[in-house]
Amino acid sequence: MSKDFSPLLPAANPPAWLGVMGGGQLGRMFAQAAQSMGYQVAVLEPADECPAGQVAQRLVNAGYSDAAGLDALAAQCLAVTTEFENVPADSLSRLAERVFVAPNAHGVSVAQDRIAEKKFFVDCAPRSGVMPAPHKVIASQQDIDDIADDLLPGILKTVRMGYDGKGQVRVKSREDVRAAFESMDKVTCLLEKMLPLAYEVSVLTARGADGASVVYPIAENVHRDGILFTTTVPGPNVSDASAKVAQQAAQAIVAELGYVGVLCIEFFVLTDGSLVVNEMAPRPHNSGHYTMDACVTSQFAQQVRAMARLPLGDVRQHSPAVMLNILGDVWFEGDSDTAREPAWDRILALPGACLHLYGKDDPRRARKMGHLTIVAPTLDEAQRQLNAACAILGIEP
Ligand code: ATP
Ligand code: MG
Image (cartoon, helix red, strand yellow):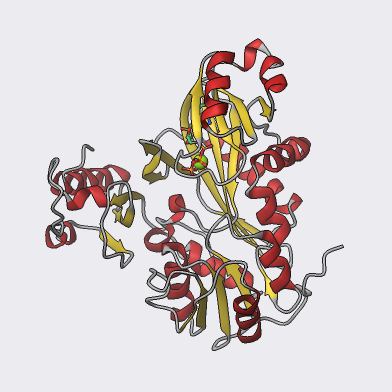
């Protein structure tokens, strides 16, 4: 049985301290949201220079499993959350003996292990109405010999630590699987059937300690080189029917998990219009950044409310929005390796431009440095301004 601190505690009101595991940009935007509500924020992060550490009132400089660091966080804070998926579940359990932790170790451990996650989705399907892609665990040569013909072509994904398309290999034959499995040092993998995607959506949800939940509008995502490129809301391809199915599925999933906090669930919409659940992130998500500028309650403010056991906020979207990730690439012209600052003045001259930079001083290609959300009275107008932003930044729209 879980030894978790009771969720039936009174709300943690400002100016209480809230803690976050991880010092990346999601921790930074969490801290900023918490501070704007009057909270004080402590970040636990091993790096001494980090996006969240720049803004938090306290940086606990310790490893994610460091007992003294965890105890310091628990002693100071009334509640603790996480900003990254691969936070050690044992650390959350340790924290939960002394302080309210949302999401808890259970939810996070399901989300960080593709096998547990797929099994959970399958078990949940009678209630959610959606299934994951057909798949098979690959842990040995025998597993490869046993692959059914109709699982190929497929994608071999490492079970743990995958993100931004890392730890994935596309495979056409058992021979490809064998080679890919060996190239990944034979860590346990999951083989997923390659599905005919029409487009990808994510559904951002939040659930409070009292069991109440909210679902944001469906976001349509475009990836480039394995990294989220844009999120558009409302999604230009999303039909009312598939939006309804996805929203109901998300609510069933978050309830079944007994989850408290912000959870983002990624779905594929196939060419035949059917919906497949892909994966979930136990935290605010890159595809939810548009909520900062286009919704009444941002995903980070929602994370604060859930962990503080306050009522969840209004998820209403007041403006159509397109979010563009700003990668380190835009600091470099062509193949040049000399970084120069992009023309932010020209970006900020665009109507509806909301610029968010994460305070990282070392731009590298493929590194997430910030994001730009364009809000506008119509989606067409937002897309027009986004194209203008892409032209300024030298990005193919
Ligand atoms: P991220 O961190 O960006 O969400 P990830 O590394 O966790 O990515 P996935 O989201 O599972 O990995 O896969 C990355 C991308 O690969 C998906 O967004 C999708 O475009 C494609 N993809 C993954 N699984 C399948 C599949 N079964 N069929 C077709 N395309 C797929
Ligand atoms: Mg994904």
